Image 1: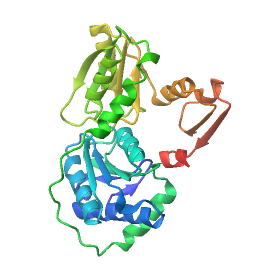
Image 2: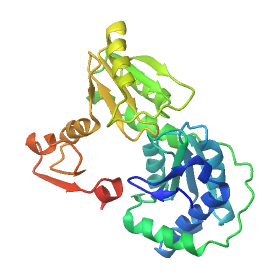
Image 3: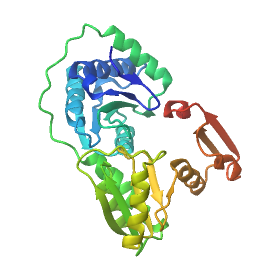
Image 4: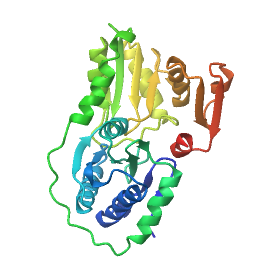
Length: 305
């Protein structure tokens, strides 16, 4: 019995269960579902990206091989943030697969599937599972060497944030970057520097650390307080493993929960309606910042719906 299951955000399970043949079945099922739903078909490439887990390169290679075996061209986007891969997929009108377990421990991993117009929803999950069951006897192509990694997706994502520099007063600010094993750890430093800040890299790790922006480990909290005092920082920033959730701390190293950061971001973006899970802070309503707040079940597919 495989541990792989669709959860709050994508397909996740034990690394030992993410065998090449099983990954190939899911990739094939995803592409078949898109075709059945009237998607673009094989005239567009399949984009594949990954986080920095030790298991991710091999799983990404299996996904690339499976897509090529299904008759698609592929684009290996290498290690990059999940939003960077999604942005590039939308730009190209192409499907994408991100190999990541987000913030869960390193003995687990997962696949996040993206349609040309964004992340899949619960209806798509059901469709993928139907096609998965129909592909039980499908043979698995041997993994082939992947073409060179393309940096275009990451470059486009970086330029997107550098272009907003005039709206941020970061000149001269010392901003600590809790790098750990975030796939965005170098990108954040480059962007902050381009916006006039002085980036201070901290806590870089070559082994995966499961940083959860909604449930920080006690050691992360203590590290931030120590760094803020030692380096006289104006703020500390970070992300989870695949960099689709931000982490922000003030000049004393006190972290804001991700849902609170979401409230502030939505306000800055001028949102009048906010859609968020039932577990988010009641500050969404109590702040009085938004005309309408819609609560959903936990999981990005429900929020998207």
